[in-house]
Length: 178
Image (cartoon, rainbow, N blue to C red):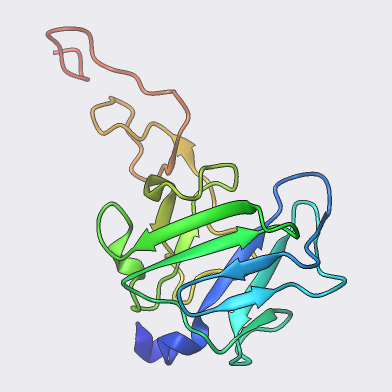
């Protein structure tokens, strides 16, 4: 809850992740949101398989790059990332209503991408963080593989990634063979 976290605006952050095996020189790249515009300075690198944390000027997080004082909008916003020749490299446009997770609307949870290789502009690839305040600069969740189809005989309610192992009853039978 916000009582545990403090003022929502103080804890806003954006996390970049480089899922490639090459470092990315972000010098003169830019990030834009509704209320913030930021240009990466000389020597800004997003290292291979690593996170970069960006935040408002609040001093809440260590080892973060400050984007300024502009806040993220809770009801709907966008994050655009442009390279050094102003080509759009990545985009996320989010809201606080379906199909986006509504629990990440100023209530302590953050939006977190389920898989770093997923399309991050598709709301189905996001969830509200379980951790209050999110998990800045670390893996968002622990993948649990299993059958995620509740019609499967071996449905696993703890699984968050379907591994194709679902087993189904024979026609005209239930999972117990009856």
